[in-house]
Image (cartoon, rainbow over all chains, first blue to last red; front, side, top):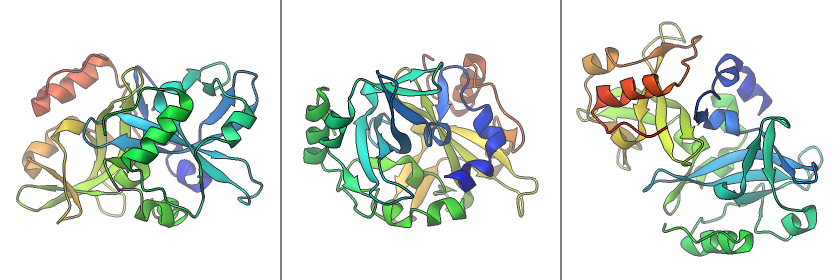
Length: 130
Length: 130
């Protein structure tokens, strides 16, 4: 992530203006809960090809030096950007997050409709029409 | 871009299933015109923070070893994915693309509503409500 950002830091710096934000800027952004605890950071963004809407932010969570880390897809709707903290805020404690749908860094979910519904149900957001 | 992708090639390989696609997978994907000419590749994706919709794919265009290259924001709606070519197809010849709204690799557009309307008008897509 560091190498990636450093190669286009100029762009990243100015790519969060107006109402548009660059995906490259979202990636790497910290995620906090309402208690201000750092939960992880956004690793990737899943886009619904048909509607063009961002469906999930995939958050990397836990681990140390890459060990024990895993990915938690969060419905885009549950993330609020907090300019003060410079990151996204979700209403979620660590225990609830640990039990949430997630996959290992070497695993690859099928992003099926069932998987999507499982995520949406866990976070209490309406199922999307994929 | 190479360093970035190589660090998560496993994920990229499987992140285009069902109707969802990872932003990291969109980035780096080639863009062709209807004549099959390679125009460039997707450098970044601009997301409308309010609606959560992808507004533009920023395509890097032209140049050699990074010199003379510039970025062309393309409305997401004008890109069709073609599995056969393994890239996006736009109905656009090189001359039309050269005259399209673009910025240098060291420049940073303000992504204002005016800028957005300028892009949308050029490509003949309805202006979006930013």
